Length: 275
Image (cartoon, rainbow, N blue to C red; front, side):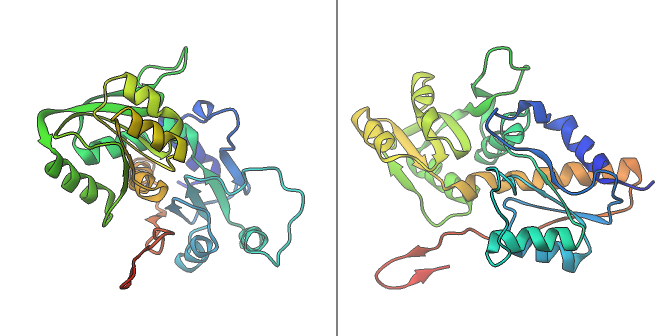
């Protein structure tokens, strides 16, 4: 069976309906022809020139990213800039780009579910549930450990889950950790909800200075796990779902995850830089 871009789109829709996206977001097919036959799909967190180059070299003409390639309205396309070059390269090679952003954040078994699972949390529920939202959907997740972890055990588990050497923390990490709230990506605004729902720790990213001060004043532990590290694990879930569809639908296409994508930040201290 020939897979077309619209088939990839429809498959992603099954598990992460695009209607779940926030009103300010831009998701779905952002570049390309829905009727185009698919040679292969490659998934990554961010739509970068490096990812497009990887798609071209691997023979994939469809790209799925979490962050949208077009977010704000374009007033011009300057191909002398990295952003303009990406669009030129994409169009000249007939590459389709699909964005699964806040719909994948809010979906049942979405971005924050993956993060909660990596931390080993159970009894996981949505942290923020909009009125009328389908059961199991919403932003962020809150769960618990059946057996409390010491602060040392939790820290070790956290760093392994995020694949980081260290993280920034505001407030005090409690001696024992039972209830943990998480939100993959930028979730500073949900700290109050995590606190009110009884979380011992809140893990997210891009924590605002004012939120960190509030955490310290309230003796509440907030951990900034970085945007990349809290969301990147979910890309593998998109790949897994497309691999399953490839088999059940008989598409016979390549389904890959980017192997070149890496954290945009590095750690640096007075002695040396950590890559």
